[in-house]
Image: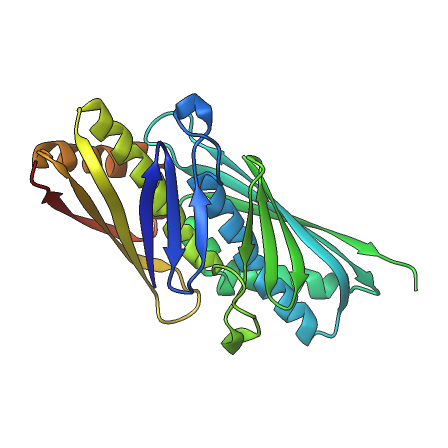
Amino acid sequence: MKTRIKFVENMQFLGTADSGHTVVMDAPPSVGGNNSGAKPSELLLMGFGGCSGMDVISILRKKKQEVTNFEMNVQGDTAKHHPRYFTDIHIEYVIAGRNISEDAVKKAVELSLEKYCTVGNTISKAAKITHSYRIINEDD
Amino acid sequence: MKTRIKFVENMQFLGTADSGHTVVMDAPPSVGGNNSGAKPSELLLMGFGGCSGMDVISILRKKKQEVTNFEMNVQGDTAKHHPRYFTDIHIEYVIAGRNISEDAVKKAVELSLEKYCTVGNTISKAAKITHSYRIINEDD
């Protein structure tokens, strides 16, 4: 997998992936940027959420779960001193639907975090990853 | 640092960062997506390039280097079997300018990869990170 990252100006960079998509990255004004795009470390957390989310929605579909809304909150904490890295990351899965099985959600999340999610498997060598989930069962 | 990732449809997710920026993530058609955005694992590699690029351009500015063009190529390889993770990542820095000092580039890259880059410091616990650089000195 290849990506190309091009400097534009100040602290602004454009990342372009093999898939053809381009993402703007920038820093806040406090460190010389213009806040024109996501911070690089935010991309890491978003990539983790997207990666695990794709696993979970795929598995819930196979388990015939009727998901009507699905979102995740990913929070990361870094070490206080250099060399900084993510030491703790929490991912919360919020799944809404009809008759959603808690067992199905639990298994989908575990399969993603223990086996399928490449981003999670990579960053879990540095960060302690914890998770939680909320199931919102809507009335029929 | 907090991010929110919302499922849209098929394999499409929107990631929204604290900084207010939103990134589309998707998967290729081969795994049920529509390729409407970057893959989550591509975001990890782009985030690494952007993170290290911000360090390097900042340090080169402090060292009064006249950079006219700067880009990086980041390539990542994953393990062949589940649980997959990035095992090897190579980052190439391509820096063009006038009278660019190789020593300045070498030190900037080392400072970023060994100390300042949070994304690099996180993923280097899983992947072996190697680097190279090319300096293109333009005629005055």
